[in-house]
Length: 299
Length: 305
Image 1 (cartoon, each protein chain N blue to C red):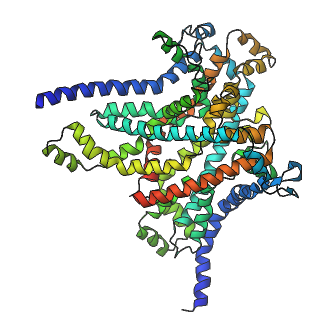
Image 2: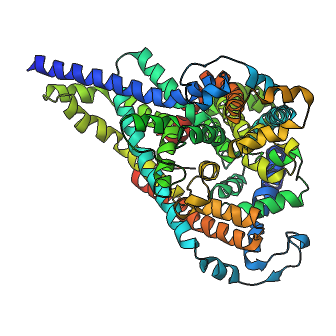
Image 3: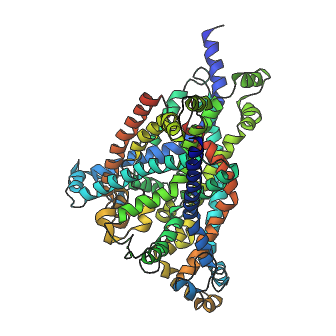
């Protein structure tokens, strides 16, 4: 009996391992293929010869896009947006979460403010009203249209608030008794012990800014103001456009045109856009997981 | 101590807290509440040149009449619910199954490697994923169809065939989200008391029986919770994904409320109609969100806020 069980168990474990390997491959293979395409010769790509290794290895697609002013413009917009946007998000998250983490006794208006923020999660005004407000505040074509409307990520703020609320009361009381004011307590006591949560919401903010494309599409009228993902979207939807747009630009680009295709340059651009995410991936995996579990399984 | 003194004392103590919260309150007041005020467009014959809060002509619910007499509004709502429900159901079954299978892997290293690989799509935007999928699913040169033709199946135009499109959206959404979606179930699995398994073994339960009588009941409450919370998204078909992969040939099954609102508002500049459609979506969603949060609290004691 026990031998039979262990045999079937062995079979199960082997099948299970094979299945999970297959599933993992399905998740990762498209990206390996993308990388291979970006380094391949365009005729080999068009003939469908490229799977996981480059065929006719060449870096010409990368040379083409790193010489393309549109790609570089959009990269700069994205970097700007991330460098200003993430600290702005963090500042507002911390400045909002701290007062809301106080008890009602210490901050009488707390419940009203809590509802004020929570309501924005429950009800979405929709596309046109939001667009009209951004337009009325004069942000069309400005980088601030990508920064101000979502400057306070309410969900992240609630995660931080819940964490701050769970800190031992004695810690804060000791600080107040020592004569520290709210700002000093926040900076010297609360923030250092909240580091893991702050790391989580920082990464949330980073991924959000890096991956956003829709706001760029509706708030920016000129392609040179597009952030990277918005620009990529135009390349994805209309691949031939990219090559055509770039033909008349500069002399040194035209020499590449016979060597690249929309497929290879598209792959190269998508891969470059993935790099920041890949670099942060170990941290993303760690802190997103804790963030998710913190936000959902609290018992 | 006099009450008057106490009150001013309190104000002095609370004043910095007001100051801290002020910037966020202002921004949210302008951009979130300002937009909420802007839904009045839905009840006006809106002329953009006059400004958001300018003197516009009121037309009552006429925009809603026009909206609901449009021939495609019915299919759009149906498509939205079909795609959202499909994603919701598959988005629970697949991550749970994956978590259960991964839980059986003993090697910690192997577990870690599997997790690292399957989480990746979650962190990438639908722009990049759509770019990849459009190539992979192409009927002539896409890898998936080449594979299908090798086993003797006719090529399928996944993104250009109205019958295949909704399923393609559900499957590709599962592909992006199942790995990371399993995190929550893995956490719940790790929280099951090992003594329960020991007791089951003493009672003569084999692995399958243990899964049935210990593991699944251990996951039941989190599965119920995720199902209930999922209903909050009943009208979210997934704009980012669909907008980047659909085309007019699949509008009959692939056009959802969000893409409809977008085309109506941004492409056709029908501001009032688009706002009305958006308000319809937000209003119905609000009911589902509040109901799902209420039920989550009632069934599992989970408080969202």
